[in-house]
Length: 191
View 1 (tube, one colour):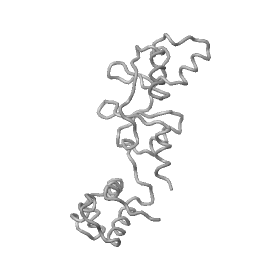
View 2: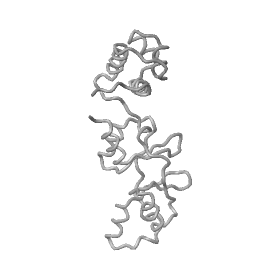
View 3: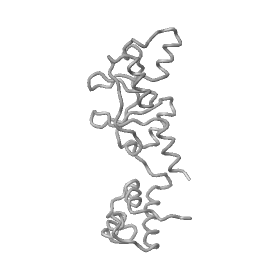
C-alpha cells in the first residue's frame, strides 16, 4: 500500500532537493504559503496538488538520490581518549560503550585513532601493550568531514578501508559515522 508523505517528509525532501519554498511553489504552480502550510501540517492538500509538488521535488534530484548530509546519520557525542591514557583504560572504554575504535586527542587537537585492530596487531607481535599509553600504539587519525558532507561521499571514504569518519564543525568533533551507521541508514532508505 502506498503511503503519502507526512508534512515533515515534504520539508525534508524539499531541502534535500535544494529547493526553497518559493522555488518549489513557483515550479509546482501553487502559492508559497500553501507549501509552508503543508510542511507545518496545518493543511491537507489535494492529492493532485501533492503529486505535482512531489514531481517537482523528484525532478530536482535529476535522477540522483537525494543528498543526505552526514549530520543526519552520525552518532553524537563522540567518545574519545587522550594520547596520555593507558591502553587498558581505552579497552575498558571501548567495551563499556560497545565501540571498536576511538579518536585520540591531545588537548583539543585530533592526533590519531586507536582501534581493536590496532591493539590486536600489537598483541600478535608479542607486545604487552596494556600499560602503554595510547600515543605509543595509535594509528593515524580517521578522515574528517564537515556536517554537510553527503552520506555517499562518506561511504566512498569507508570503501577505501577506513572503519569510521569523524564529523568536525568549526574545529570541534561533533559526530562519528561508522560502517554500521551507514548500513543501518541504507537499510532504512532502500525498498
